[in-house]
Length: 108
Image (tube, rainbow, N blue to C red):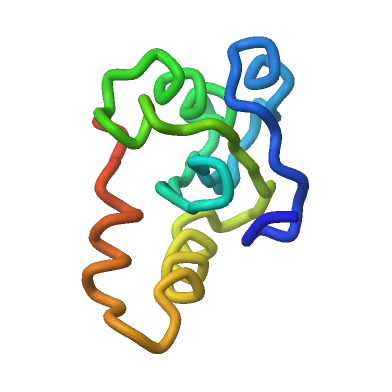
């Protein structure tokens, strides 16, 4: 189980093709280390489309190093992403963790 409370899937094209084509949040993992939290707002911006973009590698080390992914369907991806970033940061140095995990933003 992952930070989203769901199973982690191997970060391969075949597995990502089965990800939901709806709005929600997703996480990228390097083995057991959380390396990215992102959101998909819906419409053409889906969990699957965001993961496919990461898989194609234009987003730097986060994409290149990812071995697994997870996702969660939700009605308000922006709010859920903020909540997950706060949870991931914990009580320590919140600012640096949040900056590290949320560096990728889909360009409109």
